Image (tube, rainbow, N blue to C red):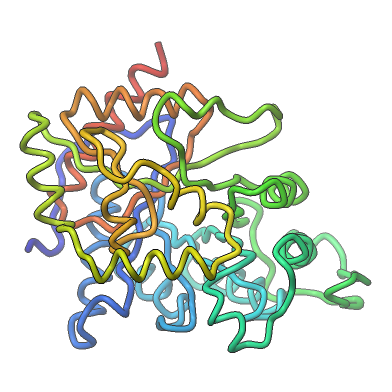
Length: 343
């Protein structure tokens, strides 16, 4: 597998903000993990991606330390760090963001997450109901944004958080203010994104079923995997080799769906399981990944992606790339989609 693969004149992803996903520490041997993170970050930067998502849950290493590793191995790639209120006080999040801006001159994106795995929340004794978690997320994100704006000391007397005359040092320069995403497909998730001026990230329905937001204010993004080749049969051969059917994984997914209060989790579980493309739920249903995939010929996948772009999606968070060559195929998709959308 290639390491730091340089790409001469990579295909453009103009008009789209494209993020990859960092490998999860639970899926890579400990002695290989840091190298794998650095490799994926370098590939992502070389192929013109904006940033890279770093997951956070009880089973994974700390996402901020991983983000630091990503910054040290790239020149401009922006970590997109999953932020869950039960893990850190909003001041701590703002402090890390401003420190990274101060030390490295690097922008960080924040993927604000209201929920998580049910067992994780129970272990932390977080019994907040689904919609109330989004109300908490709004307060949490508002405090972070006000601290980073740095125009005045922050006082907030809320239902979930209280701070008084709180200031942040070092300040964060205006051009390095974090991009804010809110992860969630429910009405409460969309309302939270609106409240904090964030991009709402969802798991898209099959192409043609997404009609886009009815509110013109809403910026939307999609969490999606892509496997595209010149020939559809070749793409499906790669897809099935990479994500073979796994009965144990299917049972795990069924159990996770039963115990989750996540709207997106239940929506994805009800999507068509296996079809000859390009929308494929196989990896999700086998608990190999947390998003749908688009699989097929370059023409088929470009058409599907163009339908999402026409529905208003301008931000895409891809699954963890298999290697640099895989990202090259994906970059061709986005290059062609951008050309179609701009016409």
